[in-house]
Amino acid sequence: MTKTHHSNYTAALASVLIYGHLLLAAEPAENAPKVPSCPLQLTIKLALDRPEVVWGQDVAIRLEIENRGDPIVRVFNPFLQPLFELPIEWRFYNTSGKQVAALSYRSRRGSRALPGESDYVYLPHLGGVCIDWNWHCGNVDDQPFYDAAGNLHKTLPPGKYLVAAVAYKALTTFHNVPQSDITTEGIVHFWDNFDRGELCRSNMLPIVIAETK
Image 1: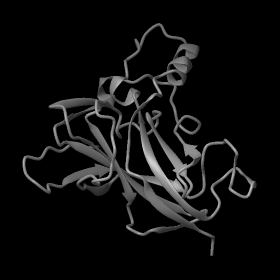
Image 2: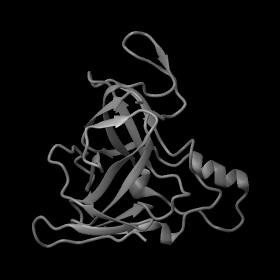
Image 3: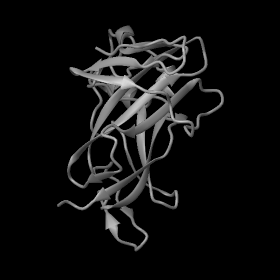
Image 4: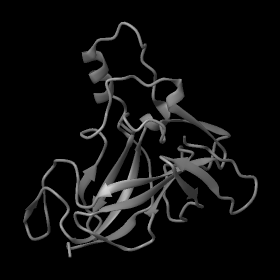
């Protein structure tokens, strides 16, 4: 079960129990930009605190979401129901700052079910949640891209990158759909058409993908 936290003093940490693992939500990075109208602040970092990851191996990247503005914010599913598509996307950039790939839950997750009230978290001011996002290093959405040398790739090859988490507007504006009298096609339409406009994004995390040893 995911627990939210609330702090009235500096440098407070939150205990979050996810899939049996106890995590700590740290203070957000100072360089984490956000849209001024968005009260949320996203922060990402390597959960294992190491700058190099190995291609083809699993690595944990920690995502933290904190309410730095409004008295309370209603946020959809961070991170209560793993079968639901999350309104968050990971974007990968080369060292020049050009986006080369993305990874979302759209092609890997989703559900035939519809969200309910229990799939929302209410974050008080300075309240937050965090999760270790397990990434099979190199896997990205099925959108081939070209590197600087003109070579075509379907996965991220070894090299230096920047990664950022981008929250969709649906993170705070998700609307329930009636649970009754809805067809399978209606459910699919719901998951395919929620608001994927950008709400806010995290800091840019430098990573080095090493070749498999």
